[in-house]
Length: 312
Ligand SMILES: Nc1nc2c(ncn2[C@@H]2O[C@H](COP(=O)(O)OP(=O)(O)O)[C@@H](O)[C@H]2O)c(=O)[nH]1
Ligand SMILES: [Mg+2]
Image (cartoon, rainbow, N blue to C red; front, top):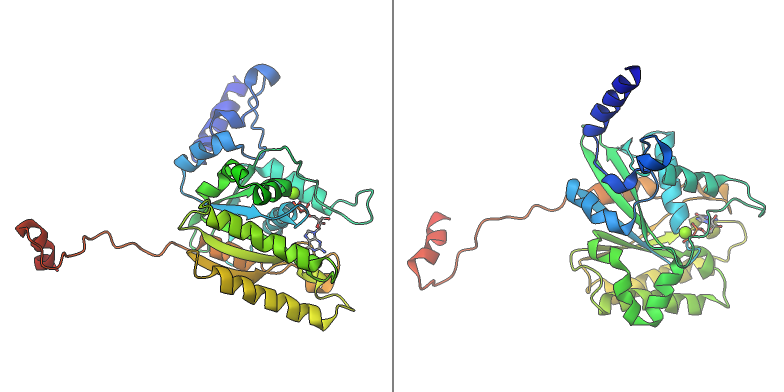
């Protein structure tokens, strides 16, 4: 009897939050309990999820170890600590997945420093859900995709594989993570810069970036540029490269901007966490309004078409 009442209360509570679909729940027959798995959202269920609620979709693109998983873990971590800019945490359908990534990003592992788990090569894309609320209580739902960097690398070299990056078709924002640490290495940076540019080019030239998607270059691991002993020439090199990218792609996509971020400033704590609240601000920015009124036709032949001009 008491159990029934608890269950009814749970159902009521669930009704006014997002419906993630049946697939998110561990089957009752397996556990005997109705518990939500809260794991990251799989590609099969994401469109149903997007159908249920107005959502912004952010696709993180970056080679392995660029810092994709750490970025989303750190973003979640910031919301655990309190408001981030003008937003507070409201809900997440992937709490457990977020918490796990955050825990691993911070945990002291056998390595000398903490790190996020490697997103495995064969693993499909997964989505993390974050719902935030602004001061007026308005809620914004964001889905952030994470997948192995090797998949992007393979698609850059073999464009037949581009169609497998199914998350891109849903993207409102495509964020390319540029690892600032790699730009400090004089021997390797030319190759890295070329590959980074080629990835954007492959995605754009082959039409897999939606025409409305905003492209963001996120220069990650800013702390590595700001630690003691970094040659000031490196900073100039980064600025030059940013300008080159802007020159090449700004006219080709809906919007192209470069932002600096630091998700886990372990190379220089003085850098602090940088750019995450601005990032959330951009991702939640309302779309520019679209005027749905018909446009008058000049010298229209039909009376019907002239009406729009008369009403103006
Ligand atoms: N110094 C520094 N290291 C970072 C930062 N973000 C991520 N990392 C490190 O970069 C490595 C790769 O990060 P990860 O998130 O796993 O990259 P992913 O493969 O793109 O998901 C890990 O060892 C992280 O600790 C950062 O802002 N600063
Ligand atoms: Mg990863």
